[in-house]
Length: 218
Image 1 (cartoon, helix red, strand yellow):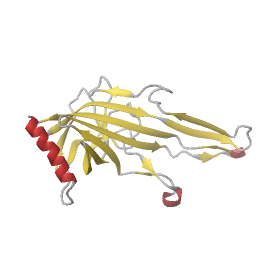
Image 2 (cartoon, one colour; image 1 turned 30 degrees about the vertical axis):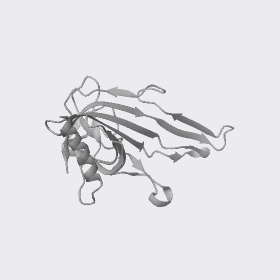
Image 3 (cartoon, helix red, strand yellow; image 1 turned 90 degrees about the horizontal axis):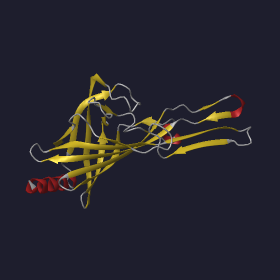
Image 4 (cartoon, rainbow, N blue to C red; image 1 turned 90 degrees about the vertical axis):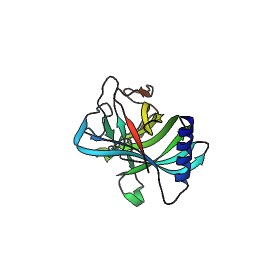
């Protein structure tokens, strides 16, 4: 078993250094019916999608730069239902001079660590509801911005050459500004590093009841 684990490590490293090949781990599922409600794992069974992490660079000491497309599995405690969340897991990006409004992304960078037995992947994304507006009497409000961080912990299965998802540590923050240029206090800023179900709570640690297995592909 240790020999196979070593071969997988070498395989990751070799393919990451090659311009001709790429290695990925892939999970097949269905897009989430509710794009933004992370507490709703109901799938849209008419929209199949792949969650794919592709190795783009080997950085040494078991650390890999990855590219995520499709999204990541969404599930909640005490429920076997699973969907693939793209809206919040991949999110938005934008520079006003270049993009105008922020645009939904098709892919984001991720970072992975693989020791031959466990694979840990961390992703970070930003979701916006694009609700910024200026109201009468010089009042204004920005969009509601939600930073997301997901840490996925996998166990390598040497028999099937696959990675089973064991845990997800999910955290959602919150950033919002409102105010009025006619007010003594023109800005009201809310910045919360953690706002999953209520303000200033803790990151959510989730264990899937269903088997979520990523297959190794090249």
